Amino acid sequence: MFSLLATGGFMDFLSTQLVQFLQYTGFANVTLGHIIMILFGLTFIFLGIKFEFEPLLLVPIGFGMLVGNIPFYPGLKIGIYEANSVLNILYHGVQNGWYPPLIFLGIGAMTDFSALLSNPKLFLIGAAAQCGIFAAYAGALALGFAPNEAGAIGIIGGADGPTAIFLSSQLAPDLMGAIAVSAYSYMALVPVIQPPIMRLLTTDKERRIRMKAPRKVSQLEKITFPIVGFLFCAFIVPSGLPLLGMLFFGNLLKESGVTKRLSDVASNAVVNVCTLLIGITVGASTQATSFLTGRSVLIFCLGAFSFVIATFCGVLFVKFFNLFLKEGNKINPLIGNSGVSAVPDAARVSNNVGLEYDKTNYLLQHAMGPNVAGVVGSAVAAGILLAFLH
Image (cartoon, rainbow, N blue to C red; front, side, top):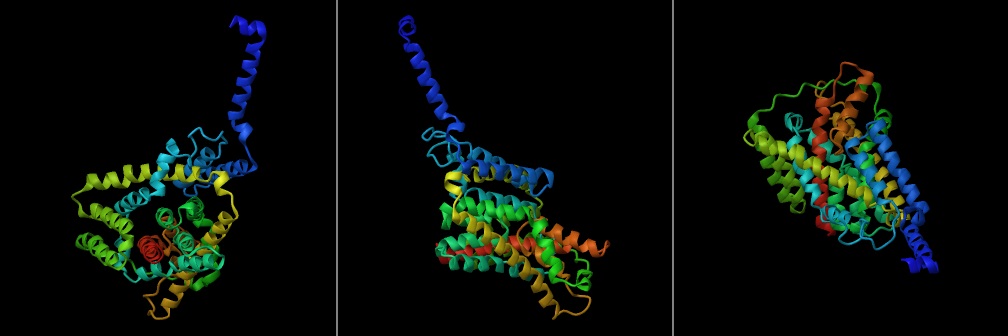
């Protein structure tokens, strides 16, 4: 040491180490792309906290964007795309489609299908809203995406984040980050995007339509539905088995009345842990070097297009269907928007817009019917696309 000091070697050693340290800091590796994605992450967090736009999704995704866009020196095994890093291991659950079925298990355990069972016609609204998926699929093909990529992009129109992750993990893993962030973004923006479309497509008279109170659904019906529904849907689209199976299984746990502990775990611990892991890892996957591309911008545009088309189709289908229904049995077209799978936000939007025109006309219970039908519909649509394109 004394010899180093005497010869000045220690100062050379210190300066070398200091230079190396500076090379490893984020300041030395930052790019404009990192700054842009960090700003996006801060925006997501702001929207989630300030306006409560799907905070359980936007806050984890937004913070994940911050995590994924801290610049670092390559080779440290800390980035989400570096093999065997901690983030990369957690991201396996997204890449391999492990988390979405577990979230569907929790959704099933939280979902009450009574509104749908009391008025089965509402199934058709959920089916009509899936048109956005196939419109986006056609649009992606027209823009030059490969068929498998177009299918993964199209599912954004179902406004179902877990389904979008599951399908993109199977069809287009390289586009998963953009597809997942787009799907969750539009889910969160349901209260912003849908009301103007609903007002545009409906008349004042239609917005004031009062629907009959739903009939009481028996416990036997509630128990039978997940079993029959699963068998029917799974036989039609076996490729949707991971999502459909877990969705209906979770619902059976809830409605059977004898598995409360399992239902509670599924609807709380399981779904919360998976939501956290999906949020932080999907956010981190938006690493600027991999995410900021022209294709990502196109995916966001196609996502908006598919979501708008889904809302249009849901509302217009109800208006068309009402032509065949007698007075007193007509459906308020404001619930047509809830055919997308954003549960329960789309149903809340139906109710809130309805209350603007009649403060005593509560549509929430009716809107939950097509809303939960949309969950099933998006899973079925994903199964269809997977069967054709895998």
